[in-house]
Amino acid sequence: MKTSCVLASVVLCAGAAFAQTPAEPPISPRIRLGPLGLSPRVGLTNLGIDTNVFNEIENPKHDFTATLSPHTDFWLRLGMARVSGSATFDYVYFGHYSSERAVNTYDQLRVAVPLRRVVPYATASIVNARERSGYDLDARVRRSEGAIGLGVDIRAGSKVTLDLSGSRTNVAFDAHEVVFGSRLSDALDRTAYGVRAAMRYRLTPLTTVVIEAEAQGDRFQVSPLRDADNLRIMPGVELDPFAVISGSARVGFRQYDARSVGTPSFRGLAAAADLSYTLRGTTRFSFHAERDLSYSFEVEEPYFLQTGVSGTVTRKIGPQWDVQTTAAWFRLGYRHTGLPAIVAGRTDGVRTVGAGVGRSVGPRTRLGVNVGHDTRWSDRSSREYRGLRLNTSVTYGS
Image (tube, rainbow, N blue to C red; front, top):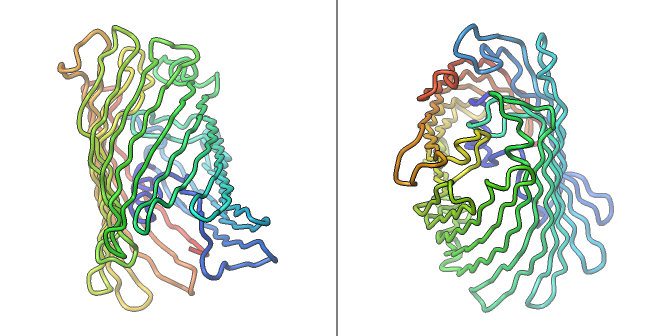
């Protein structure tokens, strides 16, 4: 269901099902219970046919599938403290292949205490999901991820703010999950310790210049040869939703220092952008770009450089109808142990094209029909696949 993932990340600007915690409530939450504000929504998505359930190149399997996703954002005042968060529950259904059915939960919490010039805060998040967690790991596997963080926002002037924070994240895969002969818990279970500093300068009411630096150490429980220290320095801009072009864009430096002598290190360009532009109130262009490192489950290829772009064009047709086209292209450049960083390893690519039509049937309800085709090519034939997905969706409250 790569097409659905791309549509969600580009159209909803949520990247994964794990959205950013809503720190500030809207002017009018949909439900108010004293100091508690709630904004629930629910979606029935991917309702249709998947022609390649397991992403196989030979003898692909097809099945009927659907995903039910209730979600709630919440805000609460407790004296001086401000509590915000979100909770998402996904039920993923497959008609014939019951092994692919899953119940997934994604929860986030943020507690902040606004003072005169400083805002100390604490964050926590928990993921428990059986899903495809990226282009490298195509199988649906059970993963749990928990993170805690402490930080402080500092108002250093009328236009300058600082954000200093530290975090600890634990990633664990089910011990029974094996993909292409690799036990995922052995290859990917890890703990990450990070510190982050960001400075924002409000250049105009709609434009903020930001420079962010982050250092992180990854320590693997079973495979210490994968241990690494990471550094990112990412300057960029953040554009207000009311600006002509909204979203954010950052381009900077990425450093990966492997602690094992046999694993090549990396130093190079990193980028992340999510931008939107609406033409004459009827046509919306959404653009996503990224370039960064990710860990692989492959024993001899511990990480890869993922570079890609995706975009969506949504055109309103009258007050209720809209049509949409989507395209995405990603390249995965793997780094092989024992080879220097300048020597190219295995290269995979993923391409997605799709189209859809939607209709609003109320102020907060939308019906949609989408079709998408996914193709993956690789230096290793066992990793190639192609598939067509045809599905409908119903969302309420968005």
